[in-house]
Image (cartoon, rainbow, N blue to C red):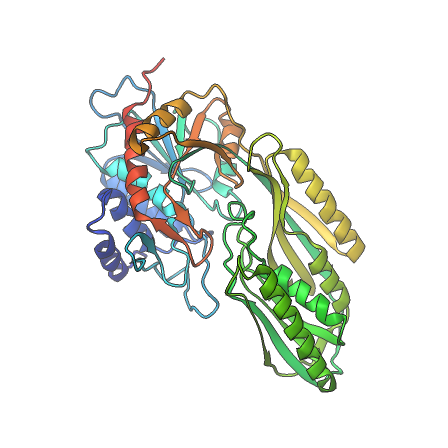
Length: 495
């Protein structure tokens, strides 16, 4: 499924950049559709390439790709290193953009100042396409000096960490791993949050419509972003904004919801939400006055963080049925929390616990609220789940919790962390920051079956991940590539 036209274009964009082999691979990756649950084409493309280069390659029972390459001459006595990335990308597009992520390639472009690579109105897939490209570039670039290498490319990380969960013990033998899935140059990550999926199901009660007017209300223009990394940045959630708007309107006007939806991914901050409402025409002026008032308040409140917030309405066809328990829907959306719950008491400026209201949908006669809870501690996760259970009980809804995955705890005895820090400092000219990230890296799940594996996570600067604003800093990719090569070259002598 490699799109040759897209590949030709993408290669022309990156042809003069440093870290040329990495960028060449990224151009290929963008030219093959690979959203979550649709990674087969890119996985097989990589497998076929590895076989053509006579590398040891196979796929495990969940579809992860594992590739091994022997040490370069003189590095046979160095400790083997595993490099890890995930195969899938987040498929997000602006509401007026027609892009089929299962069929259409990503078309790369420069920002106006040529400092960033991005896509047009869609996610770029630099998360984790740059990391994947770097792993493959290590395998293909014969100038890279390295010990025995194992490359692990995992399936469906973005929507459940399927590959990491399904990775069996004994597949990997390297005692050191470099995860390539962090997004800030100058930082080394040595721990991450765990998470759990939370879904709340509210049965809907439909009734014949007695109203003579309908409006479709749209919340758009929000920044969105990664529900872990960006959760502390005061970015508004379109579903929560919709709940607040409807709660305000319900105190001034009589109406019923006909349809409602918002967001598109559990792990992305919802950027858009839409609802069709039925009301009496006689109350239309009062309704619009109330809508203008709450719109003004919200734009005043969040205008700095989300300057492009838009709350619009258009007339709609009058529906034949409406939802009788509209007040319960509004109260549930308004009551379900989203955002930072608690900052860490032990790690400065790090979010300990959060949750994000990612998707709101109607399916099989139920309103479905989809949330993702993250925490550095199991106690923190449990506390949020208790809150969600109570809210669901009060609303007469059902709460279902699934996909609990562990965090990654910092290892003070790590060997690779100080090596990485020293090499990074040599490149940067100053000490790197060693951090714990409030996002779900696969490292914790991998360590579950490989408890003695010594892991660090690094990556270039990527902004707007999980949103159409995603972009990767070109200069930072060259720095990241140099660091990765230096880590491989300086792998410790086997003990």
